[in-house]
Length: 500
Image (cartoon, rainbow, N blue to C red; front, top):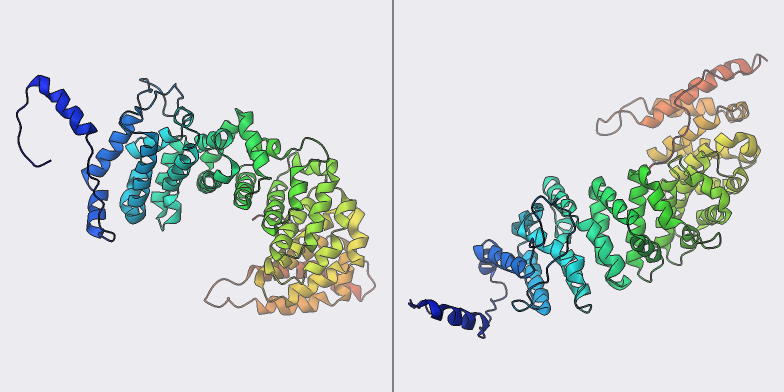
């Protein structure tokens, strides 16, 4: 301590070392705002030594046999609590959080190494062998470990560095561990941060989705946790879980069976999605509509499930009239995708027509665009819904939107819907009676010049011209008494499934 050189005999070394380790020591706390000291500690050998010492106490790597793959599960050795107590582990994590908070960019490189001491120590802290200890300390340990792993997502980090962090976390099997931690060790109130971290990881790397799905497939506990978490009292937990499931549905249709396991109710009267569509919080209703819309993007078993769950489709249609703008926007997206599938009951979908025509004048541009696309998709069920679409003046309103809406995206959506509907001769005649050709010609001519800023002409102009080519032969023959014949087939006329 004072720099004095001592000469010790062999039999004296052990008592002296023991005394040095066990004797009380004065803890030095630096002055707040001492930036130089904080930077020096974060970049010093001492910072690395501390992590290696904690890793040694936790017996990190002591259970790994030669030739084991990185994610292999083996019985873990008990930490040496004589050197560092569980409470001391918490204090160490607090120190790590302090250093990360003050010197985040200096510490981030340590999170890019899946086999680095920091990552393997965090993996150990989230392992069953460690978390099977004191149940009172488990939530605090998990939350602080997750806070360290969340730092890259809270900072302005370049894409390459973030990708390396996500890859390291994935290779350390931490996403799979987080699912096990949530399902076995945490009450819902402490599962918010792990779920938020999982959400960030899933959005950043599709291989994380594969890892998570494999873990859930091997554990009914994980599936049960995810299903019950949808109805937790934590708004944050439920919202993040819905976002996670939505991204899985959007990015990985091969994992739809995994989603169906979570969203399958125990009875017809107990359907999770139906219950969530009626949630008292508009954030949950909107996210549920968005999840449903992404599930309906795929031509797998889910559209057929709507036939056996009439209450689900009815609840979705009810969301079209929701007071909250975000719910209406997501509901129009989901109804549009439901309308695309032949297996969805046309009679029920028909009840959406009045709401969709009304939503063509919604305050939100995205909602107006979704409503237009949904009406175009309903035209695929012309035999059942054609008369209703005509009675609701859908062609009239779509033409008004196509020619008069202030937003380019909405005009384009209306034009695409009109092209889809115009494959039916009745719609063509209605459009001619509304002088659609003249109105569309004016609209097309306004799109001949490049947009402001030198960009290419708007894509709505292209749809406008194609619709004009469809109507022009009819217009030229309508005055001569000749029979009206549709124009040539247009392969680009059908309305595609919405994608968000």
